[in-house]
Length: 241
Image (tube, rainbow, N blue to C red; front, side):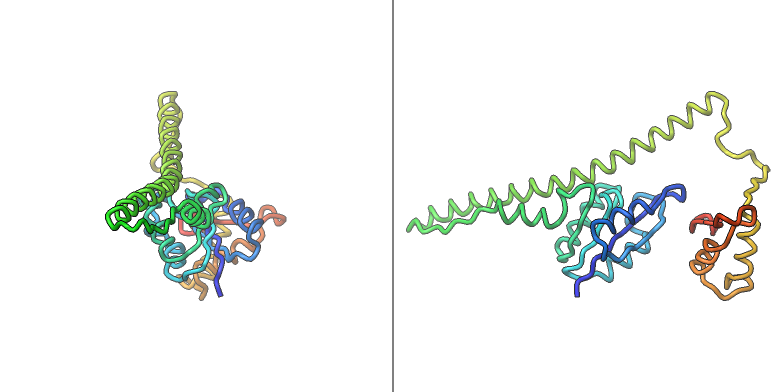
């Protein structure tokens, strides 16, 4: 039976992955959600995505909130799209539905030119068929270009964001603001102590027998000692820090 997956990724612990999950489940309530926190623009090295790519089969569907969640590098993103398309995997992008694989297939089917040539002259038939093949190749190229443009735009948005961030840091530095923590200064985090105690108690690397993800689940279900109405929520990156 074909499966439907929803792949959700955030690049930094400060981002909220819940919005992606919520939007995917709104359109596809039966989707199996795959979550990942990864910093970087290459799809190689994304462990959960790689697992998904190795386990899915023809007829399966992978849903992304946007093209940028699949890849923010235009060339690699388009290469992955073509690979999955040729494998028969359906791709859905909630923010860019015009490049969904179903839309792509429909364009190729509806616009492809079919002609049964019976002119009685082999040379004429051959000439007409070569013209039809050239037109079909042109239609295919246009469809591919639409997909490439979506990934190019996604990469441009990320590059622009990085540029604005660098400019903002430089402006703050020139105005005398401290950008990085002073060397030797100890940063105190209120929830650090109780979180460390839970790690020491439950992690198999110390006194417990639980995996990292199991310990994170325990931490995130634990009350904050300073305000027991709140939880001690930590991300994977914060946990390792």
